[in-house]
Amino acid sequence: MESTTILRRRMKKAGITLKSVAYLAGESEQTVCRVLNKDLVEKIHAAGNTLVKQANEKLTKELFDAEYAG
Image (cartoon, rainbow, N blue to C red):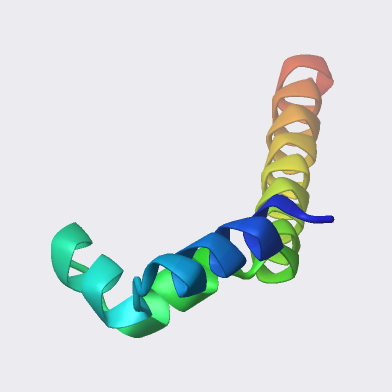
């Protein structure tokens, strides 16, 4: 069982709402919901990693081309 599922069950059992967590954290209920949605978090991390890899490849190519052009 995923840790976020366990956390949601414990929150529900204890009477803790997304609204109360959001208020205490100073965030919106939507933000709290997104953080608790493990699939979304993993999807965002994967997209970020892809962008970083692309940027690194571009920079490496530019540095290589600059060093050996000439």
